Image (cartoon, rainbow, N blue to C red; front, side, top):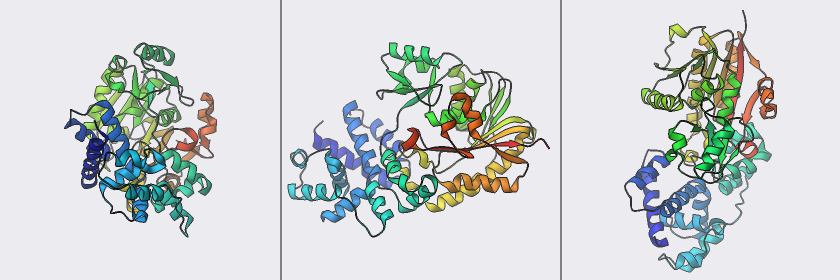
Length: 427
């Protein structure tokens, strides 16, 4: 397809994303489903351009404003193509009905170094993150880490899978994938993970249909290690969703014991049941629960409770760049209250001597340490456990940060994760 036509599709899709309340990835998926004529290269160009426009939105809008041209989805697309000289003004002007002068002005300003009286404002434009979000991340990573963190969050995340060790070893799975034409490398942190060397549609592979692996970020895999369940344990996954962590726990437990996967949404648990059957898992039981309602039969019964709490998801911005513009400070405040409520309720399921793991994929302290500190102040029967004592068995003590577990994308090349490990005292 000609460049002019591709740019036309990008501007059309950009308009649809702006007016839709759906996440960008769902809008993109629907857009492609309705246009079967688009080839794989066309879809790649369109999706990569759209995601790039979302990632660099503030910088693009600032560059257009500084250049003096009229803002529009077309010029937003062209500004992204000119950012960091991804395309030349000559390539674009040969295909699109805009003047070389306009393109040159946009290219000059979109690639300029923003300079404002406030350093945070300059960083906000340079990396295209809201100022309030950068302020939050100073608390998590430190001011000197903002540049490296934002740089990595503006790149594409690796595509990682967790080998289902109930069915196959990591080495044998790697060989099986190689036989299917898929090259992988072992993840440096997770003992169960493989990273793709080249992005493909994994869900079409026979090895996936045979249940030999699940797509799961390496950091998410490590959370299951922190729960540290033993075979024959009783484990509750309190916010199970589609069950990625429950499946990882089942593998660690060697498909023995009981895992109760709880969620308020039945459709998510229906998806987990499909994954359970594909993975050959015998130990997961699903239960639809009501929000803020205790399940009496679980009180003081579990060896381990995992709470992967609903959160802003800011640690996954590499995968969902539109999240930069959908998350707000008000949302953080509301979620922190909800997170405390969930932690408070589900902690009652931990038996004396049992373990409680609170986790998020957020990089915001108000959803992480602050929630845990508040919980511990209200529940003296729980105490923190040093995560390095658990992770040292896997030679991973280095990813523990003092009292907590914290993964940062620019340091660990994973999604951003936080976890606190707690134990209920034997009293």
